[in-house]
Image (cartoon, rainbow, N blue to C red):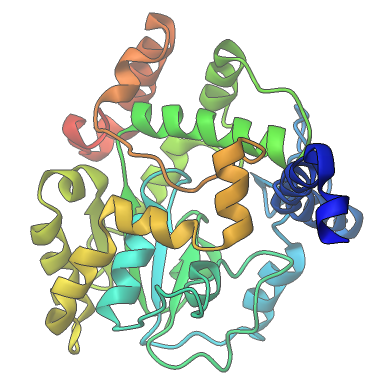
Length: 331
């Protein structure tokens, strides 16, 4: 009977169709999640379109919830002095920093049966954020919020502020946001010309890169704030990890080797694609969305128009240079 069903290559054809359908499952899940977030969102739209919402005066994606922010304001969310916040403007090397921090805490979750990075070091301003009250100390938490509100409140623990050159951030952000628009929102990609305007205007998730940098720069002398530059991670990752381990204290220095191995790019890709359906979708091209790119330093400068780069220089001169920010921290 089995042979008869597969006569004429029909069995092979059926398997091909089945594999093709399975390759769309990850994208379908992401789109269903986006639809749910949109249906739950009550926050006002941010002027300028692109489905951004206004939460506490900052443009954010539809997944960010005013309700989560209110938990910080009302005290329902309780800070712990041992908390480690990995903060950054999007596409600054956040995932790399999360992997390093979790590894320095000796949280081994890089097997197929172990928890996801999103659960291990969650973003706690989302509608679908997990309940982190049961999490053991020290907790790793992620945020793209500016240095204000809950990230400057007393007892908020330690802050690892991850920075990256502005043009490299812009290049990575353009790629990533278009992946989200195509995979999750089913929208057309945004052209480079339009993106340049949105970036300069701060009409992107989490607003202006320059305002974000300024807010943390003013906190840099706080002993519980640590500036981790993406360029230093690329130049000498082990030395950067050792410096971070000293800042975190405790027994973090004992796990530098763990963090160095876990933060290898190929190891991180294996971790991200450990789910069989995601591997299949990425291989067949039905899913483009990935948090990881082999981001090189300096590649952004050659990706944008001379006018955009000149505008970035102007913003640096007007906003950050008067604060004493070295130019090599921005370009």
